[in-house]
Image: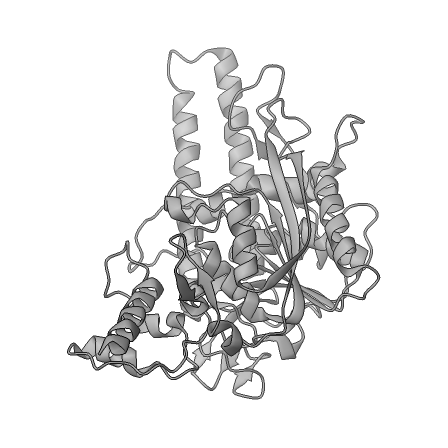
Length: 471
């Protein structure tokens, strides 16, 4: 497959290998999707780069996911058809089930077409388990919301995309005033509508939209860049009175669409992001920091590493942490503001507003969410300077910031010798440039799942420093 879109690759100075972080002058070949420095190989789907640290293996996983999705869709179809054969099925039930079966089958076929048109071939792989097909079986409402519901002609319908963008626009204008915005990264861009509205209005130097889900990214890419109209039925999960259980939708661009130059899409893991450090002027995280299931301190470390000195971060969304998140990581607004201060990020503006969420024009159920949008500016202090600073913990004890934000380098302390070889190898990596996150890589797979490797490294080193001081 050849790359068929001029929109495919972000500016090359932004890009890096997600495995070794080599840039274009260090072995990364952005046209071939390879890295000579670490011998990694990546791929693209319909011209959209898919760059993961596991390389081509990610495509194998997605092929498996797609095959499982199709298998489960067929099983669902057969179960519905079988239900209509029951002698106890009412005529009205028969009609409903057959309509639902038809809509579900259409949705499954549409999803398969989006992914297969992009270059994915469904294929079961014996080395992968027949796992849940959630990656390609969920998030349809985001695709409908971003590119389908705006076609509704009802005077009562308010496009929540526009309401959300108005809040983001207000924060952005208060942050940048009349300044031209440079290179923008949107982490967790989903189906892309918010990033699209932002790019259309502010016309930054470039906007790169990053998400880990290829279905959402491909739906945005095919609608925006390929100008496709995608038929995707919307199926109601719960019955509602006087409301059909399914609706035929067309995903397409808004009528007032303008050309989208310098708007790029990438499928990648934000925590192994394929970008050079300190290259972006603005990072936006819409509906991301809570649902990603990662300690926000680590997320802030990623953002801090990718932003230029004096650049900005805008966060947008509620604080709907996953149930599986540990309680101590479910930060409140005040805690996040304190973390911003600890990382020397200056709060510029913040607003909260209650808005509808995923409210279909044909839905009688309504969900409201509190959206908290804030902007912050990072300082021009070096990582090394921040590492040598301290923060006060809950017990009013001064601790180094590198232990709180584990992307910062650990200063070259005078470390005590360790009797255990693994511990000694960790101590030997402390050279003033290596972070706890980097040291923790050698502990992957060697610790119980409930332990955070970076926190284990920080605890070890802090204990080592204390012991060395007491000798």
